[in-house]
Structures are given as C-alpha cells and as structure tokens.
Length: 415
Image (cartoon, rainbow, N blue to C red; front, side, top):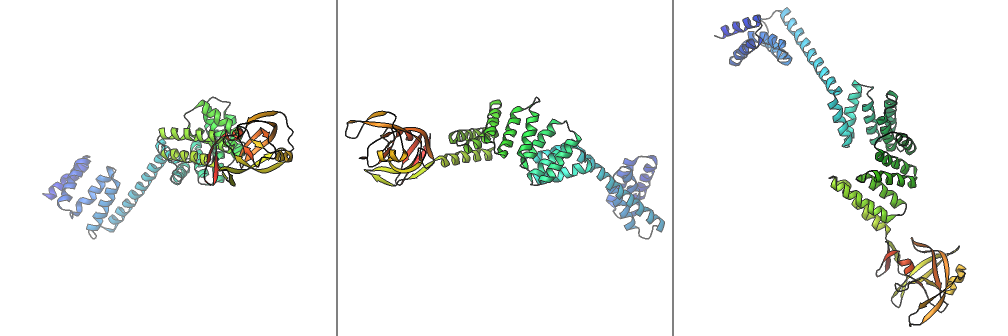
C-alpha cells in the first residue's frame, strides 16, 4: 500500500500536481518516518513551493537515512543543493530586512521612539535606516536630535548639517536645526534659525516659544519673556510656554507672576494627562512661593513689639533698629537717624500719638528702605525727635507684604 502511494506521488510530481504530491508524501512519512525514498522527492516539491527550510530538512534526512544507498555523486549534488537553498534563504532575509528598514512604518516607529524619549533604541533604528539610505534627510534630522539628547553634540551638528546640505530650502529641517542648536547650547544659532522662519507662514506660537528658549540660553531674559508672552497670546493652551515664562518671571523677581504661570502650566498638563509634568509644575510653584518669603530675625522686643534691623539708604546706607509697628501708617525715624542720612525736610504732617494728642512731624524722602531683601524705594518718612527710643516701621512699607509675626522672626511675603 505504501509503495503504491509513493509511486502515485511521483506521478503527481511528473504531472505538476505539487499539492497532491505533497499531501501524499506527508501521509506516507506520517505513517512511517523512516521511509527514506520519500524524503528526496518531498524536498524537491517543497523547494518548488518555496518552502526552502522544509526542503533543506528533507534533503538532510534523506542523506541521514541512506548513508550507503546514495552514490558519492548523488551526495555531493544534494550537499550543493542544500548550500544553494541556505544562500537563497539568507538573500531573502536580507531583501526582506532592507524592505522593512526602508518602509515608512519602520521610520515612523523610530520617530515615535524619539518622541517617547527612548533615545538608545531610536539611535539603533536610525543607524540601520541610514545604512540603507545614507542620504535620507528626515532620518539624519531625527538622529541629530537623538545625538543631542544623548550628549553627542558633534555628531548632532554633523547630521543636521548634512540634512540641510541635501535640502537647503527645507523649512522643517531648518526648524529642527534650531531645536538641535538649543539642545547643544547654541542659543545664538537657534535664535537665528527661528527668526529666519518667522518670515514665512506657519506656527508662529511654536517659533516664539523656541526662540524664547534661545534667548534664555543667551541670558537675555527680557527678550525671552516677550517671546513667551507672544507664544501664549497665540496659543493659551501651551503648558510649556506658561512654565517657561514662569521660570523667566521668577528670575526677574516677579514671584507672583511666576507662581501664577506655574499653576496654569500645571492645570494644562493635568488636562492633557501628563501627570509627571503637572506634579513638577506644582512643586515649582511651591518652591517659588517658599523662596519669596523673607524671614527676618527679631532682635528684641520693646513693650512686646518686635524690633528688626532696617537699612535706610539716602546716598549712604545705615542700619537702624526699628519697631515693627502694625498700627503706624507711616514709617518714622528719629532726628539722629535723619541727621546721619542727611535728610532735608520737605514738609510736615500731623499724627496722633499713643496718649491721644496730635503732634506735627517733619517729612523727608529716602531712596530706599530695606528689611533684608524686602525693599521699598523712594519712600516718604516722618522725622521724630530724639526723645524717641526707636523709629517705627509703618504700613507704608508693610502694606506691600503679607506680614506674619512669629516667636523669633517676622515673615514678609510679597502680595
């Protein structure tokens, strides 16, 4: 029965019925895996049906089961056929690999890895793409960004320069060169690129944001702040723009503005589902608020009222101890203090003192009044006589701060 099935399969091969022959030979070898004559014809059928690994396996099994039945020439012929099939498999794999590396899908996956911050994996993929297509500008551009993120500025600059040599008028590449320049600390080059692109139609909010980053690198905070403001005016949903402006505002001393922008950035990132960025912005807002609090030691108390050191500057700076009098509307110094500061009276005022009587005092101007870093400039103060033991720090200064008197210190927080 098995012999009949075997000859039937051979006849099917002669007539071109390869599927029928393969089914017949499969049945034979399933019943008797040691039926050696069936392996070689099945190998030939599999080869014609492009099942090259299956053909190789059958040729090897035919030689294993018939070590003496085959002539030397037959064994050499089969060995040669196996080598040809193995080479064909390698070539097919290389061809498929090349097609895969050249496909838009593979490049899109590599680009997505860049966006996700998976830089090492993205670099490996982009290296493969550029091995196959060394002059592919968009791949050079993406690899430049990766090199910049991985701290390889020379390689980043070389890649983006090569991309622009290939397509010098490509605005998207010019944009990416600006981003790469930011990454490697070239603020001046980044500003040039983004300024150039502003002459064309496009996402100007994005350009203002990135140029603002360039100005920050150059230390030009005023221009950076203006660019961030323009970016926000064009797109008030950009959390990065708010966070960037907050950082500049804080550096410029506008703590209240910085806190408001950090909080807005946090809210926008939360809406976008970016929890880590939201958490960081909240932390930055808290840090800015904390750093804005000025803590001043209480030197002593006089009748329970705190005494703090105050620096008055009217051409020359002097440090005096003043009472922190929350009930005084105007800061007052003694005549001795006024003499040291060389204050020239420029008017008078009347004030009610503790015993209920109304007293007339001279008025004068000082250039600045400071309690540590809490400063009020060009302030008009009153001048008492030398019967006063201490001067008074009044509401004309404290009204600009939220003041909290603690046991050993006073906290000044900008309003």
